[in-house]
Length: 422
Image 1: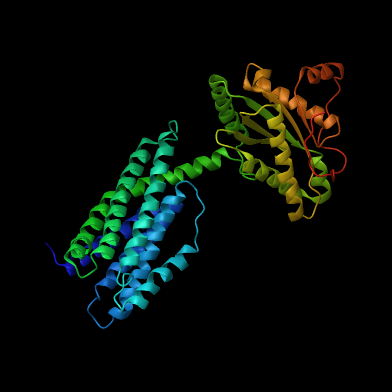
Image 2: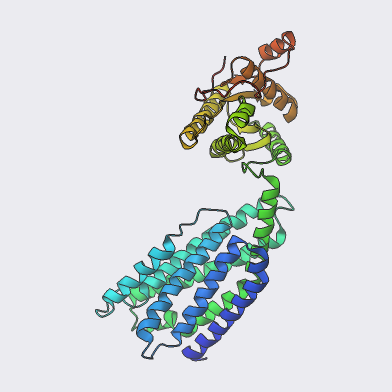
């Protein structure tokens, strides 16, 4: 077997080569979040390995702690890369806190030779980070398998599977190192078996080469998914655009009908929206749209759909709600939207809601049209309320065939949104 120093040189050279190829061939073309964090992880790993070559020299007192700091930052970047696959929030503060938390015990207890001396804290942290990254990758793999083609992308599914398996190997390896460090202590033969630099380098080398192409495929897939997401969403509000809303709402509606679940279709329209643009400017109008869209996005549950239909009209499909439940949900949305009044310097327009049940029509769009009719009745009755479609609403429209009240007149209402069924 090659000696420790040679293995370090080999691993450092391979890591540097992979870093250059990955940066040029994957990160620069895709600029995906996953590839960015993975590039940083490779850079930290390459420099950390290079610093270890100075062990035994007079510079070791500086280079060894620096190598640990880079290893901690690198493995944190690995977790961030996997976490970005599901667009989860990244605790960036960890990049500054974790290196200090790992290095200080080593420096404090180093002379005394306590349990925290040596690389024990580093091994434990690496096992936790690789474990967390592996969980994120498995979750991303499972979510991707559940998608329909072409969104599922069979190549990406395989790439995520390989990456998850490699992460499992890394996590297991460092768990064993951490446990052995505490139980056997660094001077024991057991520790040498699992902590031996040659073993470490072999595991890293095999996994690094094994996941290179998989990580590249995941990075390209993330860019494709991001482009698809942008194409499906409204640029201003981030909600589904009209076409994608129709597709996903139809799917949710049919799934609810086939499974016997309750479903409500909601049409929402900002009251007297044109006046906001005319009096306060289009930036204010955009701010009102974004505020309402944020309230919608925060209220959407798994399987439900929300989208912008154009202008100031929005649509939703709510699941497992009766009339009272739907009304409570709409009231909560109105309250959440009204809370944004404190962050703008103009009066937010109120909102009129119309909603109809899955039982009110044979197709989604029949139900949608009836919810739309109920919304116009809400406007005619004074705005700033929610109206449930019913036979009375339909009869009233036949008796009063005049054009419905629109949101393009008068001045903005100042009353806070509050949904109410007449």
